[in-house]
Length: 436
Ligand SMILES: [Zn+2]
Image 1 (cartoon, protein in one colour):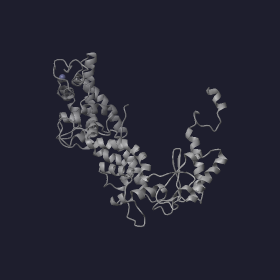
Image 2 (cartoon, protein in one colour):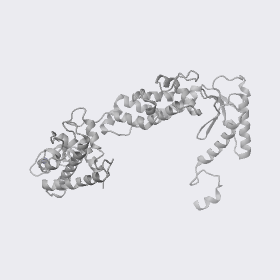
Image 3 (cartoon, helix red, strand yellow):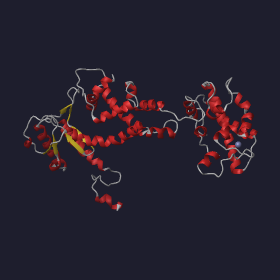
Image 4 (cartoon, protein in one colour):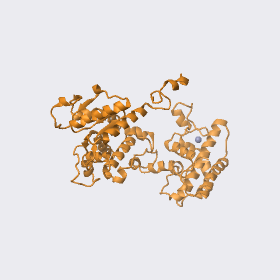
């Protein structure tokens, strides 16, 4: 079939032809007729409030065309022009399917003079269904977050940077419309956004009060959503610079996001823990390891046993017999304590004065006092390399039944640490290293 289709189908045919889109011809027809109607001085459109003389004549959505006219003459003229265009292009306006609709007062009370079917509906009913259909899923998300259900799931997921659909869509929508409404009026979209949002933006002091420009005192349903979004995330006090950039909105909200608590740490420290997990000085695989340690989901036996994946939760080190938790494997177990003793000199060289090697420091990078960032950038990779080597030696024991000495484990760690040294020497302070 495909070999002969090219012969059968006219070059202008766009439907069901590979490489062409059905919308191509729609857009072609739409743009051509729109050009004719917009240029026609005989058709008077609807004036846009506050736009200094701009009018709107054509409103498009996909293949739907709406023409806005303010008098009967314009309606006749529009239909003439359309027929005219039809004779030239072979397209035809289906008058039976074309309807007229009144918004506001109409000068001529005799509706029978209109050459179209007239639909008498209230303007509010006219645009409500479409708006509600779009806003419903977003609105439902807000409801959940407010009830706490959504919020809890989010924190459970752990730490920061999880996608939040409501925040993501809402910040884009808000930034787009606030950019339109707060920028100097140059086009119709800006004029309309400023008119409908004007009163609200004046109360937020985002636009100057200009008594010559009209504003609407009622928010449209879709702008009520914008207001709800700003209130929900407590963004109403922010500046124009923040509110008109969706990235600024996102990062502002995400920085405030409550963090997942880490067991055994005082309140206030989790932020430090989660920052250390994704520390820019760490290799990606070391970040992964730190993340699993902080979440206590490194696949040690206690973790695997609680999920029914191993028979026992007991530490695999000979003669240990205790439950193998993440903390046990990295700190409490005999093998771990031997390693931290062995690696003493290596750690002392980068440990700030007065700071001791504590489980909090080893597992999460939290010291008794705040550690200066320069010292921490040396200390944290060192500790992470040692933890990684310890974890590898434990896996070697479980998988191959090979026992390793603390000296050997420390050597493996030093080897891994060498990469940080080379990296640091060649490009000091570089952002995110990747796994070599
Ligand atoms: Zn043990």
